[in-house]
Amino acid sequence: MSEDAVKTFHLQVISVNGIFYDDEAIEIIVPCDDGELAILAGHEEMILAIYEGIIKIKNPKGEWIIGVVSIGSVQVTVENKCVVIVNTVERPEDIDKRRAQEAYEFAMEHLMQKQSIKEFKKSQAGLARALTRLKAVSKYNN
Amino acid sequence: MANIKEIKDRISSVSDTMKITNAMYLISSTKLRKAKKMLLDTEPFFFSTKAMIERVVSHLPAETENIFLETRTDIPERERRRGYIIFTDDKGMAGAYNHNVLKLAEEHIRADGDKWKLFVIGELGRFHFTSRNMPIEESFLFTSQNPTLHRARKIAAEILEYYYDRKIDEFYIVYTTIHGSTCEARFEKLLPLDFIAQIRAEAPPEGMMLEEFLMEPSPSAILDNIVPNYITGFIYGALVESFCSVQNSRMQAMDAANKNAEKMISELKKNYNRQRQAQITQEITEVVSGAKALKRSKEAKVRKSERTST
Image (cartoon, rainbow over the protein chains, first blue to last red):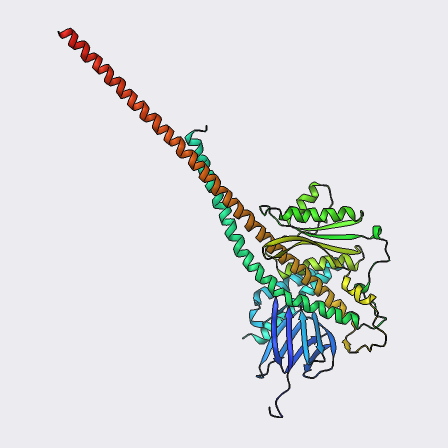
């Protein structure tokens, strides 16, 4: 192996309905509470909470894989492994823009009305989901 | 003995019913195949989430406070408010499936004191409890058809709401698991998470160095993120597994119904043929005896005319 071969680490992205990515990767960018965080090979051990947003995975060929995720967590272990566990993960091309738009309008409409705290939280979470999906669609789908 | 028309009607009604049960059998078998795949897909999520929670909990700084770390054991056994999440189906026609779940749930509810709340999924279970004057949570209306993640998330949000508000101390879940082709009703504790309490109770062995690592933004925030995810995953798993079980039970029930119908039809057909034969025999006898009588009367007439002519 040549010296300048890029170091990789084993990455798993797991969601409730299946494994999204399970292979070597060069880099992953995850959405945190206060911005995005990139993880490279040989990172120190840590556990992270991640929030609604977009993950970007750079595979060994140097291609970027985009996924839209909901809340979850990331674990980096000493064995140069990284596990991302999220509720849902979708590729931007799988997102139905019209449905996302409808969800966005629905959540907005609900937020306008007087609601209990519980309902407010629900519509807020729904709005966050819809917004990230819409953003991902308009950014990566052409 | 029933007459021939009655038997014929009965045969056609049984075979009509058989058409329905046969169709239901086929529908269930395709649904089962789909659901089994969904079940397989959730497994990695489930195990890795559990492993991660265990890892976080065993490395928590001592002063961390979080609602999911509480065990609620300070409340006496009889005083604890319990919530039961019961997974039934919307329809019957699935053998003993619904019955088993309801029986198991009722056993535990009776044994566990009087502070309970029922969260029932599926129309049949709701009907069962309301007809027994056991109050169920009115706003908790979910169907068991076509389990989706969206529904699991809603159910989890609803349940966690009760937990955060401390309206319910413990959540139990009653659902059906499937092993190969046998279904089994299961009763499990959902919240507080038992394995968290277990890890917390086991003090790290003397002299062992605890590895330290970064937890961002804070250990408590991680728990707030990961435990609801786990609950959602658990509920999704239970929804899917119950759906699998109901399809499997329905398949078996419909298979048995088909076999019984076949048996009934063959029995009825035998009966029908016997009746038909008897009828034919009777008709032939009638015709023959009528002909004989006619012949005899003709002969008598001939004889009479011969006598008069001579």
